[in-house]
Image 1: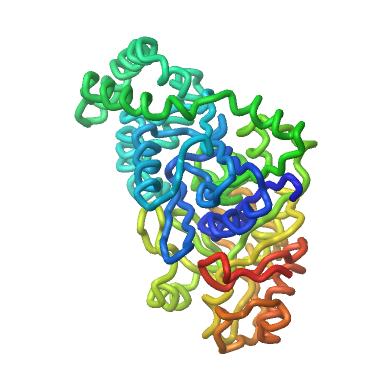
Image 2: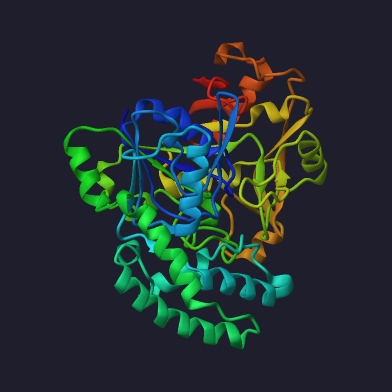
Length: 422
C-alpha cells in the first residue's frame, strides 16, 4: 500500500475509524498525528464495539505498529485508561504501540480552564468537549507546555508541574474555580508516566527507518477539515491542523514521502457543537436519531444532521489534495426519497462555489439543492458496487464528481465486511 493520509472531509465524525481499520489490513504502521482525546473513532469487529480516543484504530489488527506522534496532545490518565480498557476487551498492547517523547501533555488545569472559558462565553460558546485540548495547545504555542519527555523524568516533571500549577491555580482562583491540589495531581501523573514509559520513543527516527525499509504507513486523521484551526469554520474549530498537512508536521514525515490522500465523508453531513451547518435539516436529523444513529462517540451528544454538502467537500478536496474518497453511512439513506445534495450556496443574491471564510457569512448562506431519487431498499448486505441499487450508484458517483476526487470505497454498515471497494 502507498503511504496514505486519511482525513475527514466534513466536520468530523465521518466514519474515519472504520475506514482506517479497513485500510490497516494493507499497512504496516498506523500513525496518529494531531488532536487529543476529544476525538472518538468507533470500530465494530467480531461482535465487539471499540471506541478509541488517542490510540490509532490499527491497534485492533495483529502485526501492526501504532504510533502516537509529536503533534498529538496526550492526557496521560486518559491514555492509561484507554490502554487498560482495550486490554480488558482482549486487545494485546505492548511493542505494537509507540508514543512520541515530544508529544505535549494535557493536565488537569487545562481541563478546568477549558470548562471555565466555555461557561463564560454564554451564547458565543464554541461547543468544546471540555477535555482541555485548546488550553494544552495554547501552552504548546506559548512554549510553556510540558511534554511526554518531562513526564518520564519524575524529578524534572514534579518541579515543572509545581511551577505550572502555581501559575494556573492563580488563574483558576480569579475565574472562581477551585484550585487544584499539587500532591494529588503529581502522584497521579507520575503513576501514569510509569505505565507509559515502556512505549515512549523518538518516533520520528522510527518512522524514517521504517520508510527506508519500504514499510507502508497509514496516517490517521482526527476530527475533520472544517474543524482545522487554519482552514476550518473559525472560531468553531479545534486547536490543531486536521487537514493533510497536519500529518507531516505531527509525525515528522516530509510531504514528498506521502503518496496519496483519502478523504472520508458521509453520504450526508453532520456536525457536533456550535457553528454553521448550511444544509442542516431537522427532519433528516430526527429520522437518523430515531434509527439510533448520529450520537457522538466522545460526548454522546446528538449530532446535528443535514444533506450532503458538495460545496464543502469540494473545498476540502482542494485543501487536502484528496485523491480518493470513501463514502460512509450510505445505508443511513436507504429509506429516504427524495435525497438532496447542496451544489452551491446563495449569499446576498450571489451564488458561491466555495464556502466563505467568515463564520457570520457562512451562517447566512442558503443551500442550492439538486434532488436525487432514493432507492428505498436496504444496501447493508451489498458486497459489490455493481449490486447496489441503480439510484444508489448514481448518487455516490455524483457525489464523487461534485467533490472532484475518485470514488474508492462505499461503506454500507459499521463492520469491516460491510465495505465495498470500487
